[in-house]
Length: 178
Length: 390
Image (tube, rainbow over all chains, first blue to last red; front, side, top):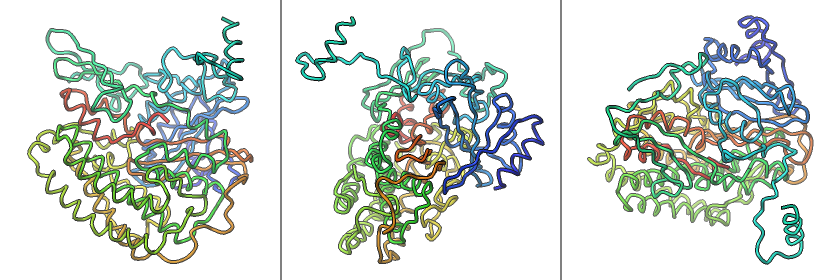
């Protein structure tokens, strides 16, 4: 596998104005990654999959991350055809509240289908171009995104009939609000 | 089979399930198979639309066992979530331990002593053997052979679980591997007992082979059913025996050579017809290869420590950064992705579950098949819901 610098050069040659940035990894593992600009991510992904030198035909893992100022999606790519990898690519949203769209890479790699749905469900990143973007683990009527760090559990606990101590206090508060 | 045009222009179409139209007149029957159905492997639901006996739409529904495992792990130390990994794929807890330990070792640069590597291989292959044996048993049970093959498989699984219990103290919730080795050493008596069990395994595989492989009903029910094309399998991220039954030569034990797998001599069986029968056969052949690895590992295992004495287990703070560790678990690629912010807890802890991602192609395999075969196709994927829902 080529180094990330060489891959970055190759991407910039194939997709003009791609806006690729190298993300350093100071840990012992040292696996560096590439941050893509969301506008050109689909073109870059298609290039990485189809190019004869990379053939990154297998998307292994899609992860959502909740950073203090934005949300991020990380993709781990491997090549089954050439038995090489990994290449880690990532994309960031503008903020955590109203501009949370990222382009879906499901059209390029089908394995992102359920994983992007999971990130939509648990983190609230909206993947544009996803063929079937619904909640996957939580139920359809559920509000909020449980993997976010500022998530507060809803106060819909079914209190036991003989509540006592802490539970009684919470139950009384809960009933007074109803 | 009518293949509809793409809904959006960006979708390529070839890697999407076709949209099927009902034939002739009559109503569609929509059936919710599960979440508590005798043939589902746990609390899993398939919303199936039927045109007569033919499946024309299938949507899997997840989440009944969702407990936000990833967030639980982000709230505790690295070692604290090791016991929870047992509960992901509870049939194969030892390989879950291994994958998590591997990811943390990658993050911290921790070395593992030789003997611990051998123990990991021995336990990993025993886990693979009992997983494949029981998954074949479950598959045959879903075909209607209630009991016999499953009980044969469980008889063998019981011997292996006895070994696990003798070594780790628990049959399934083992909590055995540590960052930099294994928790306790195996005694000479345990190794002898393991050799004895392994010596009996080829006879069991032969017995299953004779009982099932040329069985007329099994062949009629599974051959040509649930075909998965190799290019779709790769694109949809399918891994493990499912991928190799589609004829794609990709085994992470060979590709990454993690641990000490590159020292062992074993082959990777591949499927020719990409159907349910091939998935059954690949599991049978992989059991034979597992026995080969076990024999070599039990012969060569060296003396020495099972823990790196300098390894830190508790309260360590890895440098900020990230690592992705993956292994060939019995069901496919099991990966753990960890991000450290320099604190004692992981900032982000992600499980890459093979069971969930292998289900991506369930609809593609089931469309156009009879409703009775959907159960078989689902059984041939081999999932555990503890890992699907996390």
